[in-house]
Length: 325
Image (cartoon, rainbow, N blue to C red):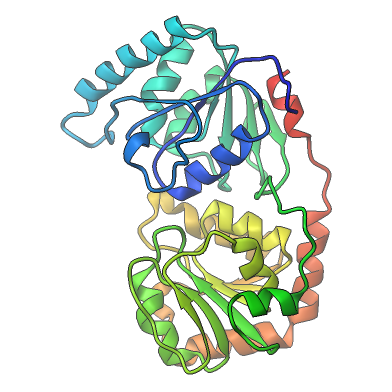
């Protein structure tokens, strides 16, 4: 896809769940510009891409109208300065003024929705979208199935033993634990009490202690973490759900209980009930004995769950090339 002649503006910002796939898509094109709220200070944004910061605010904020108008003015200036052919939006309030400007100027808008339901910003702009790129079934017009995240995978083949060695671990049953790009204090407190297996645990800014395992705040090489793991315990953000399917990893999902529109529970229900590739546990029920019971059930049904994940991963999907045609 390098050499693509269209000028593409990627509207993205916020958490790693929004910015990581946006940057993976940017790597596929030759002429890309980013715009979003607070990109210059985001720990998840790689600033080798050209970008513009714009103002934005959460809809419930007292500054929403003021910052939206200011961000709209800034976005219109970006469009006047650059000949933009397509705008690809990755959701969240960080992108609202950019997409609003694109809609006013009648630019071709492509929305990417990683979750199993449209987020608020994507719902608002869906009527203006040329296409809506989805990973999972969403009842909406103009939707196209695209490959599951991650879109860019390392070229080298790595064995499980080599992946374990990267984390300084021995070849044995291993559980990967993480709470998303920002970590999860609940996991840091509860999992060391419940788990006796060897672990790889990414804690975010917190800490955790195990008899056997590797504990780090953050890991860029998530591909190696998935390769090293037999089982995963995690939240159910959209990128995580896609990665579990891509790497065929049975998992225990504990949705973040305060996610907007309860989208993490919807994601978890999809992979547990439709794909049948995981088990789900509400955080309020995630006590030591219950976590151990769920791990035992996943181990018992491991082959069946792994097969279900492989079957869903093999489904037919549209190439990313077709999003900007």
